[in-house]
Structure formats: C-alpha cells, structure tokens
Length: 196
Image (cartoon, rainbow, N blue to C red; front, side, top):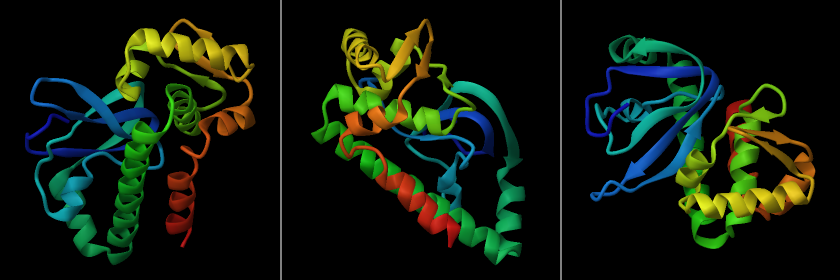
C-alpha cells in the first residue's frame, strides 16, 4: 500500500508480517506498527478515509485475504458486529503505534530488538522469525551495525540464535525480560478489547 494513493484493497493477513512505516520528506523510513494474522492493512478506510501518508509492505512473506474496499465497506455497513470488531482492532493498532513511539524514545537498541523479535514471534508459526539485519535496522531506526551488535548480545545471552536472514527464538522469557517493559502492553490491550 503506497502512501497518499487511494486504498483499493485491504488485506487480512493469514500468515506473514506486513510493516506499516512512516516516510520523511527526505525518504527516511521507520516502522510504526506491523500486522500479522491478528489484523488487517488499510485501517484508514474504517475512518472514512481513502488514503494514508503511511506506507505498508510485506516484510515476512505469507498469505492474506484481499478484499476490495467497496466490498468491505458494504459488509461493515450491513454488520454492526463486524464494524465494532474492526474498530476495536484499529484501536489496538493505535496502541501498538504509541508503544512503538515510546520504545523508540525511551528504550535501548537491545530492548527494542527484543521487543521486535517478540512481536515477530507472536506472528510466526514456531520459533523461526525470518528477518534480515537490513529490515531490522529499518524497523528499529538504527544502522545495520547497531543491529549486529544487539543481535550478538541477545545471542550471547541465549535468547536467540541468529542465522542468515532468520532469527530462532530460544528463550522467550529472557527476551521479555530484556524488552524491559517495551513489550506486552499493546498485546494485552489486544487480548482485552478483542475478547470482549
């Protein structure tokens, strides 16, 4: 989904990860949220908007259901329960964006990397999270060398095993501890509002 272009389709991710990034006028990008099997892309259409300044792209390949925007809007109008559920999801996406901002402003690279790996692990089948250092640098807003150093620390502590273009989660509890509070709030909010 390109920024400032009409949203023609939304995608309900079955597996894989889509990244939502903000792009500066100079072309610098930073991930503000991601979408896995818990959600959908193009939430702006739920607020009667046809475009967004954010860009969405597939970060971890998988599959998704593609629905034309007019068909989804028709379904939302016909079903108050669908509207309610999708708006609750949109709320959790906003909380994730807020938590990303908090993470970027107040947590170390090691903590942010642990958070991102946990988020990827939440959306993966099994313990393999297919990620490259380049993508992680983009997601964390740091240089690739910073990702390499942080990966080495997490690997040295037995939390992960870094393999070319893949991270294997070895100790999720340690990753949560390393994340230092940067992980968990938006996940708990998702469970709370979508279980209701």
